[in-house]
Image (tube, rainbow, N blue to C red; front, top):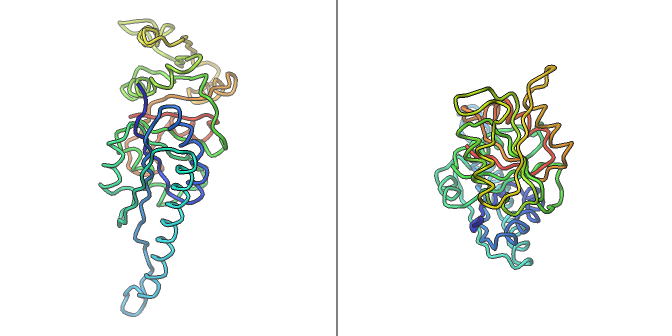
Length: 281
């Protein structure tokens, strides 16, 4: 099993260049077909007094800039995939709502996995909110490349942030192709409570048994919340201490906008992670 169709989000020329190597690496690993997606958005233009009508010259100039970026991104994507011999296709659409459009979402829903680049927390804008909404609504696992990670490397050690939720469950099984190829997988829970099924200390043990039947080398670690150590801090320390290549976790959030999309633990971890991160909801 594997990810045979990858949708790579090429939202800007800079991200297209930096995401190219990761896209090629993933495609080569799973012999995948890659779809490059770019949404060209109708730009908002200030109204001109006194009639409060958009200035035609300004509208045209702004749209020409947007179209040039579409052309540049498409060229970067095609050159990279062609040079590496990767099966690929290019999709670009113009929409007033950008990546929030039904066209973009439907393209993602027919892929095995969505690959995107995570920007720094300071790069908050309407376009990023729009893109994050697209990733959230896609219904597919999303592999985010942190901005600090410049070159792909083999995924040998995987950390699964486990709390028994629906989102965490989806993420764990969406990540099976990565885990089956990894040297080791650790199921990590923080502050798990006792239940009718198992004690908090054994949280994740049943999932570990299931993964082991796939031939995965898996271990289980649980940590109590102590000395004010939050779940996100515990995960952050685990990533640092164990040189994790891939973090697997559920995406939690209810708002359609950036500020609330990946709420709580998810948002905090993503802002600081140095590892590839697979998210599912």
